[in-house]
Image 1 (tube, one colour):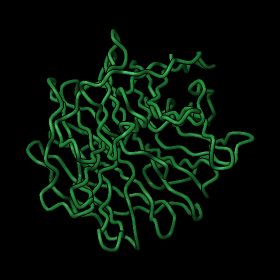
Image 2: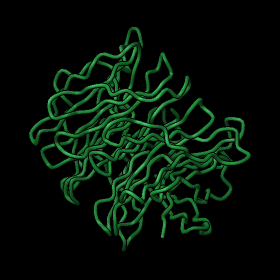
Image 3: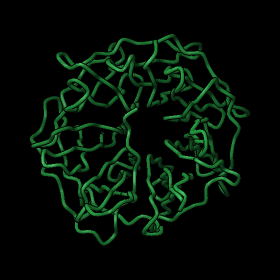
Image 4: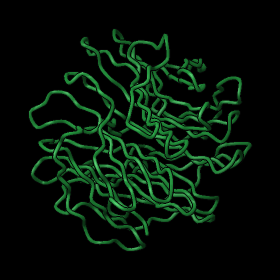
Length: 379
């Protein structure tokens, strides 16, 4: 999976924005996003809209002369556009990254990722916004070494899920990891043993007793899905999609209407649907003339209004943005813009909600080398 971890931006950095490109057909247009001054790599793989006039994006940033990544957080308001926002205080030498965000309300937002200690062992990294600044929150007690949190979903203020994986520092084997916020603390929740190495990539919550997480069985190179029923996590069978396949995004319309997206056999998009009884593969288009197409994230506004985003590549390079829409009958590609003078532009997260702005975010590598934050909006 080619998804980059998110990090929080430097509070005192001078913003440098990629120029906004022209509006694309079907309503997508690039919107300016700032990069911290002096940075050479910036990416936004996490996104959460919280109201019709407010949204958060999280990612990572690295200074041109730095050796570690730092958290990057950007805040959108209807009045001010995207602006850099200070993350929680962390040691300047620590490599700390955010990968995803989820909102309970405008004054209750979570962001998760990973941070590395002095031995370069990874640990879960969690930040929380309560309306007046981001604060770091301790990950679950007893979290295994090598932990990384890749996704987060919120049911309520006292019911939030974060998922990812833990990687044994000695063998590098990965196992699934799930942590739950009960309103007081994050706690580990057991997940069923899986064959070989496995990792969660995404999570979506319908209710306290209906949560889905998807990812990849790394050794088998096949997708998997697990379901939380309020008591335990259970693996749920998926249709065979062949090796070199994975699921990297999931969204829930209702208990019997869940969608997951990813890539199949590396070269083409993969969309699967849960109807309350079984998962099935739903046909999804690929970009004509491109050798690889992949979907990284999906978000539903309703049963006939679902968006998925990713990228398409020529010969595994030169990425271009990819957006697809489900209208209740079929998935179709909707044209989307790329950053001007970009060597490679990709979309890593999307968020939609009835009556709220539809955003997608990611990154764009310029022809001169630096990688910039990137965002588009559908209007």
